[in-house]
Amino acid sequence: VEITGRFLTPVMKIVGLPGESGLVWATAMVTNIYGGLVVFFSLAMKTPFTIAQVTILCTMILIAHSMPIELRIAQKAGVQLWFMLVLRVFGAFILGWILNVIYSSFHFLQEEVTILWKPGNEDPSLLYWIVCQLKGYGVIFLIILVLISLMRVFKKLGVINRLNKLLEPLLRILGMSKAAAPLTIIGMTLGVSYGGGLIINEAKSGVLSKRDIFLSLSLMGLSHSLIEDTLLMVAMGASLSGVLLGRVLFTIVVMFILIKCIKRLSEYRF
Image (tube, rainbow, N blue to C red; front, side, top):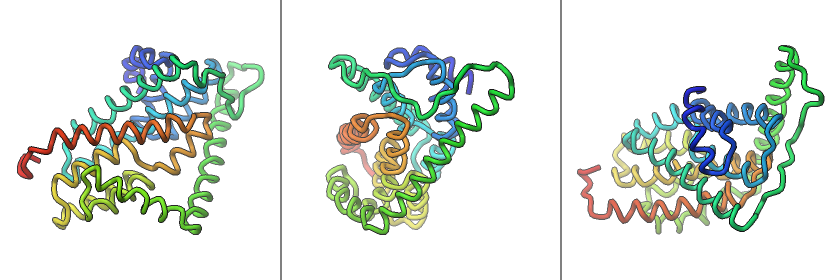
């Protein structure tokens, strides 16, 4: 993780972030979102972040995180691992750069972000460090608990079903077949682990074509868990302009490009 973080230092500066934030993104990519957020809390104690910077970092994390697990899911479904790795990491960087250009050009979200908690006087002792780490985990645990409760409320109120119905026409435009659209929606709303797992099952049964699998997992790779993860990042201080609106619009553009590129490819080429 540390080696990856050092490698990402100059990359983070290109997208308007402190070089040290590379360790946050690297941790999220190698482990998961929550691991990255713990590192972010530690960094935010010493390094001030603007709302724009937190939004950029959170958006990049949302696109590229939990790579060992989620890339393996895509590979088992039939999509080449190297393609998904490039799509998600490079896609996260490109969107981060675009957001930085927009935010800095229009002086948007340049206020310092309000962190949920900050320590008092700094104590270099091991005990102090342990307490700070436990506080970080505690805050994240409480946020996750609230999000799980919200998800249950949304399901009971029918919000998830309504969102699925709204997304289905868009997925058809983006090249999804009637069979792939519902599974893709599950991945977009609940996460790659859910949607990808279902697609693996359908791929083995031969219900989905290779083209469907490729497009579905590409879309899910860029935009997944749109409810829970988005709410989590907003709780961290990120703006919806990046973690939701920017991510979805970027995904649509990339999907149109992919559709144009593969339009003439035969099913055999997949």
